[in-house]
Length: 201
Image 1 (cartoon, rainbow, N blue to C red):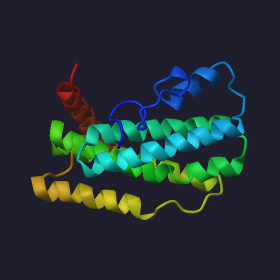
Image 2: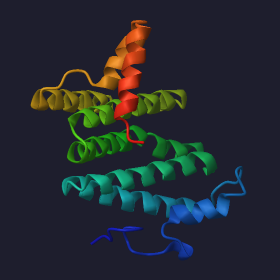
Image 3: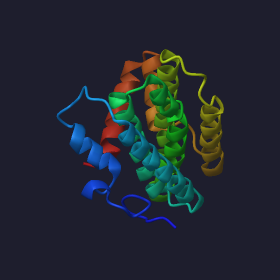
């Protein structure tokens, strides 16, 4: 059993909602400090708990909750990168960043499909693909092995399924990107105006 709010095991580490919140408080004024062995163990414990709940949310089609837990895991990874005492420990987490982003993108796209529509879902996938590609480049710079090369392909397949299922062409944002790439700046300006008018205030 897992709690649906806060930490999945229902505990409040050191009185905080999650161990991440506690660590943020402890290290807010110590940007160059390194985690102790105990802190590393507690971070790993929270990584595992949020992984299991994220998978459960995806299976239950609770996409907003899956998105929230993916963001928590990414924030844990950022704290590891900032305060890890051991490069090997950093890499053991960083190698999974693209996988977490893959789950996050799936959740974001399907949440957008439910709440806004297929065009917004496609845009969520495009943003996610960019983030995954950036994570892969970051991994390469750290000397990590190639990270889940099929993830982008799977998201591209999901995007094309949305297009076929809902009979959509290129989204406005995609058309804008095409216009900029082709140096068609007049069309790009018109598309920006259209996007701005459709965006919520």
